Amino acid sequence: MNDAIQPQPDSARRARLIGTAGWLIIVLSAGSALLPVVDRAAGSTVIGSLLLAAGLIEILAGTQRHETRMLAMAAGAVTTLAGLLFLLNPVAKFFPTITIVTAWLLLRSILLFITSRMAHGSVRRWIGIAAATDVVLGVLLLAGLSIATLVVTVFGPTPTLVASFAWVFALSFVVTGMLLLEIASFEREMADE
Image (tube, rainbow, N blue to C red):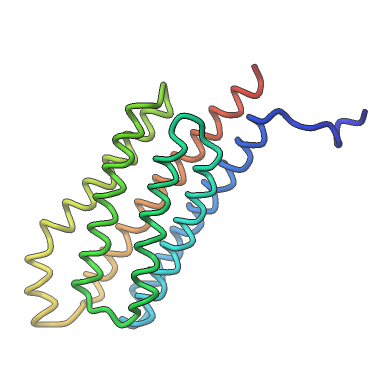
Protein backbone atom coordinates (compact mmCIF):
# COMPACT_ATOMS: atom_id res chain seq x y z
CA MET A 1 0.00 0.00 0.00
CA ASN A 2 1.28 3.47 -0.92
CA ASP A 3 2.10 5.97 1.90
CA ALA A 4 -0.23 8.59 0.45
CA ILE A 5 -3.29 6.40 0.96
CA GLN A 6 -2.40 4.75 4.25
CA PRO A 7 -4.56 6.07 7.08
CA GLN A 8 -2.67 8.26 9.54
CA PRO A 9 -2.88 7.53 13.24
CA ASP A 10 -5.78 9.27 14.97
CA SER A 11 -3.38 11.49 16.96
CA ALA A 12 -1.73 12.76 13.78
CA ARG A 13 -5.11 13.71 12.29
CA ARG A 14 -6.14 15.45 15.53
CA ALA A 15 -2.79 17.25 15.66
CA ARG A 16 -3.21 18.55 12.12
CA LEU A 17 -6.77 19.75 12.76
CA ILE A 18 -5.94 21.40 16.11
CA GLY A 19 -2.78 22.99 14.65
CA THR A 20 -4.75 24.41 11.73
CA ALA A 21 -7.32 25.78 14.20
CA GLY A 22 -4.52 27.43 16.18
CA TRP A 23 -3.09 29.14 13.11
CA LEU A 24 -6.54 30.28 11.98
CA ILE A 25 -7.23 31.93 15.36
CA ILE A 26 -3.83 33.67 15.24
CA VAL A 27 -4.71 34.96 11.76
CA LEU A 28 -8.07 36.18 13.10
CA SER A 29 -6.22 38.25 15.69
CA ALA A 30 -5.02 40.47 12.84
CA GLY A 31 -8.66 41.35 12.15
CA SER A 32 -8.79 43.29 15.40
CA ALA A 33 -6.43 45.79 13.76
CA LEU A 34 -9.48 47.01 11.80
CA LEU A 35 -11.26 48.24 14.93
CA PRO A 36 -9.58 51.67 15.19
CA VAL A 37 -10.39 52.50 11.56
CA VAL A 38 -14.06 51.55 11.37
CA ASP A 39 -17.11 53.30 12.80
CA ARG A 40 -19.00 51.99 15.83
CA ALA A 41 -21.55 49.86 13.92
CA ALA A 42 -18.91 48.36 11.63
CA GLY A 43 -16.65 47.77 14.64
CA SER A 44 -19.41 45.79 16.31
CA THR A 45 -19.74 43.68 13.17
CA VAL A 46 -15.97 43.12 13.02
CA ILE A 47 -15.87 42.09 16.70
CA GLY A 48 -18.89 39.83 16.29
CA SER A 49 -17.47 38.18 13.18
CA LEU A 50 -14.07 37.61 14.79
CA LEU A 51 -15.60 36.13 17.94
CA LEU A 52 -18.03 33.96 15.99
CA ALA A 53 -15.30 32.59 13.72
CA ALA A 54 -12.89 32.02 16.62
CA GLY A 55 -15.61 30.33 18.67
CA LEU A 56 -16.58 27.95 15.87
CA ILE A 57 -12.90 27.12 15.28
CA GLU A 58 -12.44 26.49 19.03
CA ILE A 59 -15.48 24.21 19.12
CA LEU A 60 -14.14 22.24 16.16
CA ALA A 61 -10.72 21.94 17.82
CA GLY A 62 -12.42 20.97 21.09
CA THR A 63 -14.09 17.99 19.42
CA GLN A 64 -10.60 16.56 18.92
CA ARG A 65 -9.73 16.60 22.64
CA HIS A 66 -10.05 13.63 24.97
CA GLU A 67 -10.48 14.30 28.68
CA THR A 68 -11.28 17.98 28.26
CA ARG A 69 -13.51 17.80 25.18
CA MET A 70 -16.64 19.27 26.79
CA LEU A 71 -14.77 22.08 28.56
CA ALA A 72 -12.81 22.97 25.42
CA MET A 73 -16.03 23.03 23.42
CA ALA A 74 -17.72 25.11 26.16
CA ALA A 75 -14.95 27.74 25.92
CA GLY A 76 -15.60 27.87 22.17
CA ALA A 77 -19.34 28.11 22.79
CA VAL A 78 -18.83 31.12 25.10
CA THR A 79 -16.78 32.80 22.36
CA THR A 80 -19.45 31.95 19.75
CA LEU A 81 -22.21 33.33 21.99
CA ALA A 82 -20.30 36.59 22.51
CA GLY A 83 -19.90 36.88 18.72
CA LEU A 84 -23.60 36.30 18.16
CA LEU A 85 -24.47 38.97 20.74
CA PHE A 86 -22.43 41.47 18.73
CA LEU A 87 -23.83 40.41 15.37
CA LEU A 88 -27.45 40.41 16.53
CA ASN A 89 -27.08 43.88 18.05
CA PRO A 90 -24.66 45.67 15.68
CA VAL A 91 -25.52 49.16 16.92
CA ALA A 92 -24.63 48.42 20.56
CA LYS A 93 -23.10 51.31 22.42
CA PHE A 94 -19.52 51.02 23.65
CA PHE A 95 -20.45 50.07 27.22
CA PRO A 96 -22.47 46.98 26.39
CA THR A 97 -19.55 46.04 24.15
CA ILE A 98 -17.17 46.24 27.12
CA THR A 99 -19.63 44.29 29.25
CA ILE A 100 -19.93 41.51 26.67
CA VAL A 101 -16.17 41.31 26.15
CA THR A 102 -15.44 41.38 29.90
CA ALA A 103 -17.99 38.62 30.55
CA TRP A 104 -16.56 36.60 27.64
CA LEU A 105 -13.00 36.89 28.97
CA LEU A 106 -13.93 36.05 32.55
CA LEU A 107 -16.16 33.08 31.64
CA ARG A 108 -13.47 31.72 29.30
CA SER A 109 -10.83 32.11 32.00
CA ILE A 110 -12.95 30.09 34.45
CA LEU A 111 -13.51 27.31 31.90
CA LEU A 112 -9.81 27.30 30.98
CA PHE A 113 -8.76 27.17 34.64
CA ILE A 114 -11.01 24.13 35.23
CA THR A 115 -9.64 22.57 32.03
CA SER A 116 -6.06 23.13 33.18
CA ARG A 117 -6.71 20.98 36.25
CA MET A 118 -7.31 18.00 33.92
CA ALA A 119 -4.36 18.54 31.58
CA HIS A 120 -0.71 17.56 31.95
CA GLY A 121 2.74 18.93 31.19
CA SER A 122 3.20 21.77 28.74
CA VAL A 123 -0.47 21.66 27.68
CA ARG A 124 -1.48 22.35 31.30
CA ARG A 125 0.98 25.24 31.43
CA TRP A 126 -0.39 26.78 28.20
CA ILE A 127 -4.00 26.38 29.33
CA GLY A 128 -2.98 28.19 32.52
CA ILE A 129 -1.33 30.95 30.50
CA ALA A 130 -4.48 31.33 28.36
CA ALA A 131 -6.69 31.41 31.48
CA ALA A 132 -4.43 33.97 33.18
CA THR A 133 -4.30 36.13 30.04
CA ASP A 134 -8.09 36.22 29.76
CA VAL A 135 -8.63 36.94 33.47
CA VAL A 136 -6.03 39.74 33.45
CA LEU A 137 -7.58 41.28 30.33
CA GLY A 138 -11.06 40.97 31.87
CA VAL A 139 -9.95 42.57 35.14
CA LEU A 140 -8.19 45.37 33.23
CA LEU A 141 -11.42 46.07 31.35
CA LEU A 142 -13.36 46.06 34.65
CA ALA A 143 -10.83 48.40 36.28
CA GLY A 144 -10.75 50.70 33.28
CA LEU A 145 -14.52 50.80 32.93
CA SER A 146 -15.03 53.72 35.31
CA ILE A 147 -12.34 55.80 33.58
CA ALA A 148 -13.64 54.73 30.17
CA THR A 149 -17.17 55.69 31.25
CA LEU A 150 -16.07 59.25 31.91
CA VAL A 151 -13.95 59.50 28.73
CA VAL A 152 -16.62 58.07 26.44
CA THR A 153 -19.42 60.07 28.08
CA VAL A 154 -17.54 63.33 27.55
CA PHE A 155 -15.66 62.67 24.29
CA GLY A 156 -17.23 59.57 22.71
CA PRO A 157 -15.17 56.47 21.88
CA THR A 158 -11.71 57.81 21.22
CA PRO A 159 -9.33 56.17 18.74
CA THR A 160 -6.86 55.42 21.58
CA LEU A 161 -9.55 53.70 23.63
CA VAL A 162 -10.73 51.68 20.63
CA ALA A 163 -7.12 50.79 19.74
CA SER A 164 -6.55 49.54 23.30
CA PHE A 165 -9.70 47.48 22.98
CA ALA A 166 -8.38 45.98 19.72
CA TRP A 167 -5.24 44.82 21.57
CA VAL A 168 -7.42 42.93 24.08
CA PHE A 169 -8.85 40.84 21.24
CA ALA A 170 -5.52 40.37 19.52
CA LEU A 171 -3.76 39.20 22.69
CA SER A 172 -6.52 36.79 23.72
CA PHE A 173 -6.70 35.31 20.21
CA VAL A 174 -2.92 34.94 19.87
CA VAL A 175 -2.63 33.16 23.23
CA THR A 176 -5.57 30.89 22.34
CA GLY A 177 -3.93 30.09 18.99
CA MET A 178 -0.62 29.32 20.70
CA LEU A 179 -2.43 27.06 23.17
CA LEU A 180 -3.95 25.11 20.28
CA LEU A 181 -0.53 24.85 18.62
CA GLU A 182 0.89 23.38 21.85
CA ILE A 183 -1.96 20.87 22.02
CA ALA A 184 -1.28 19.96 18.39
CA SER A 185 2.40 19.45 19.21
CA PHE A 186 1.43 17.11 22.05
CA GLU A 187 -0.87 15.16 19.73
CA ARG A 188 1.97 14.83 17.18
CA GLU A 189 4.23 13.44 19.91
CA MET A 190 1.52 10.93 20.78
CA ALA A 191 1.29 9.90 17.12
CA ASP A 192 5.05 9.32 16.96
CA GLU A 193 5.06 6.98 19.95
